[in-house]
Amino acid sequence: MYVPNWPKELEHFTQRDIEWCYNFLINASVNISLSEKQNFIIIYLANNRNYIYNLYNNSQYYFNEKLLDELRHGNIVDVSWILPDDQRLLIWLLHANIPGFIPFDTTNNCSFQNHVGFSSVVYPSTNLSVEQRYSSIIEYIDSIRFNTVDANPKQEYLNSIKNKWITIKTHDNLTNWIDKDNNDQLVWAWEYLVKCEKFAKIPKPLNKHEYYTSILASLDLFYNFQPNPFNNGLNTNFSERELFINKFSKAWSQKKFRDSGKHKKDYHLPLTKKTKECLEKLAKLSNKKENEILEELINKEFIDKFKDSHGNTLY
Image (cartoon, rainbow, N blue to C red):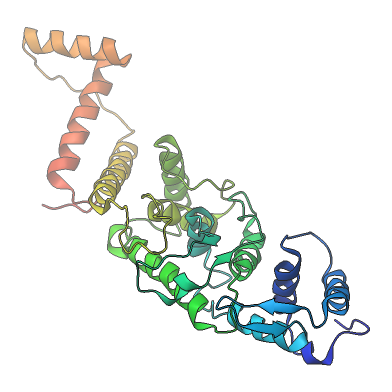
């Protein structure tokens, strides 16, 4: 967008660059138009030209368009691994609480530790709409200030977040029983996660694609994210997640099995007096009919003995 008096030295700035520049200078994210942000940058440069600016290593520079462009180089780094339509990753990032403040630490060997950074932007809300997620996350990442003209420290920091995602992401072999085209299964699965309080805290999905990505993202979030970017360890219990997914899968198999046998016939099953008394007590305790108790017990035993974790018949 053309703005009068916009510096020639900054003509190559993209919208992303301008958003970063505004947040970098004002230390706050304000909901104003792009042209208004550009005008603010023009005024800021005019009022602070030749101000002595200290970088992280105490080297001093005159504040001008050239320095601003070099600072952009140190803060606008490669985020190509974050795709606008990868809602599963975006949901994870919204819940990840990426640290916006990076304390100085000399105990670990990471170059980004020595460039004290902090974000001027509030962390994006998990309640953002699908359309808002990508731009809000990128703006937040860009706003984490690295007071250097060297892009390597911030790129290393972003790579550490990327590596956590690769480690955390649920393997496909654990979720291939979830059919992205089966609307009934997707709605049931989401409601199951909500009931178990294992769902991503996002607006309710509106279509099959949103249901599918939200379910997978919820399973990705089955952990406590380690907020310290310098700690290579992850506070993650993968075995616990696998056990939950196995239970999740079996619950779906049981539902399919029950639904397939809704047309019932009368059968006479002779029971001992003691067994009949036990059945009556179970039915009373569960507030169910005796035949419902028998169906549940038989179905559960059948699933355990004759179905694998993906619901396939073994024998």
